[in-house]
Length: 128
View 1 (tube, one colour):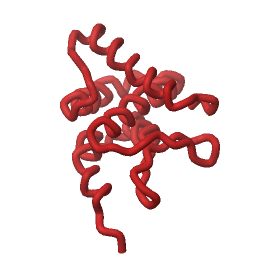
View 2 (view 1 turned 30 degrees about the vertical axis):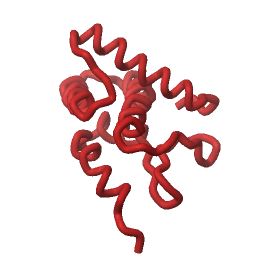
View 3 (view 1 turned 60 degrees about the vertical axis):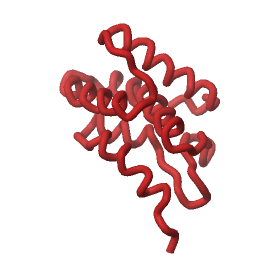
View 4 (view 1 turned 90 degrees about the horizontal axis):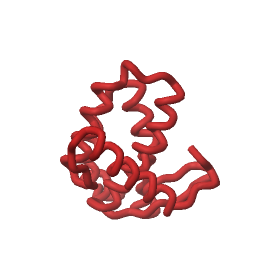
């Protein structure tokens, strides 16, 4: 991930994913749960053909898209932590890394759709 990036760059990367995949795959993507589900299936279908360089690029771009989908649906804001990692921060105790989640999905199958759907439970979990 480009550590010099700004949050506006992340939003631009997310829009690039929408523009490129919408045209390439003849589908209209946005930041909805349906689009996240579509991306989940797309990664699943193409994972086996990707080399490490492609995975790294897709982790950066798809991570931005996943993060923006989270922001649009559940709130939060982009925050750079430890001067090199972008996270979506919901409050002082709750944050997540869309890039790490996408990386896990590119390397091993995790249910991206399930992670997305269960975010409200995580965000609104009662603090102990």
